[in-house]
Length: 433
Ligand code: UD1
Image (cartoon, rainbow, N blue to C red; front, side, top):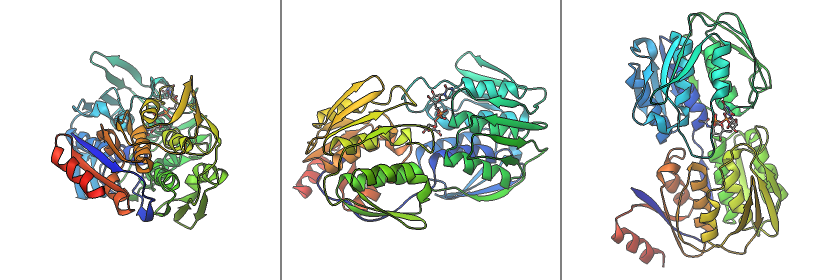
């Protein structure tokens, strides 16, 4: 077990390069198994969720050739099982995309129920509804295995009752191989929906309208090989933007699509931060203590729920009172108690956090409750006076590649150490004191 040890108080300054989008990668890597030819995927982030999915793909017989940490070639021609119950697969959310990919390709799939961060009940009824509309019978079997099977997959008109990223991608995967036309209404519009659709189209699928509320898919008989590069990670970029702002830093964040960051940029500008946009980079400069605002998480293009803990942490240090409303997941404020231990003044009422900005936070021993909350606590540690020791960082490593190294390269005093390595902790404290 590892932890991060952070000595706060240093502004982040310099340049950082953003990796490919984790959540796009999960849909795309699953989709890649639908071809019987090699599919080359570039710009995959080297993070645990992606690596677990790749191992599961290999486990069902596909050839997975990891060319380097950011590039993989997958050939689904050799798949010999539609049963995925790999030990770690239950821990990641993206495992459900194997359900859609296998069902689309073989008309049959058995996948262990997805896990992922414990941020709410996370039902999959909309996935099930979509699969059933396309002709599948879906059952949840003993041990939490989802079994989906169809004699024939036939396109249909599907209205999603809630805007769901996962259900939209999963239905696109299956419908791309169903007979005839599928229409998904009230579809999610996140950048990675568009990326998965573009990827499937590069394999010969016929998907139109991704990025709008209505997606139209004409099923095709087969999908072929492709070379594809994944879009940059909106959430990794946003996290560095807020870390730069919180530490009163000056950071150029490279390899981003600035349009995908609009909701985050708008909030930063509103509270007095400078954000400069370039073709494929943004620069965030904060020279003073920032102001207060209200934030409500919404499906894209609204403010992303995956940035909620990070912006709440920034607002915890800003002047005045801010209100953050979480409207996607009901259990996403678990980090608030940890922040309170560092001196933040936040009261949670239902799905709302009322934040009274404090002048400073104090370093403390805290624990990551989930992936994005963990990133938020790192931001808190970077700003806090004194030393913060953050454990359960395995959550953070599910979605951020070399997080501590990237932050250290921007000037943060931060290391990853083994939880039992007392000497390393002492050495760190000595070095930074
Ligand atoms: C994905 C992302 C996650 C992000 C979330 C919202 C992945 C692997 N994860 O999660 O990081 O926080 O989108 O942007 O890409 N819902 C239902 N029934 C369903 C499906 C969802 O009621 O069948 C509800 C959920 O409880 C939630 C809302 O719909 O309230 C949105 O969930 P969804 O967009 O599906 O999130 P995930 O795909 O799980």
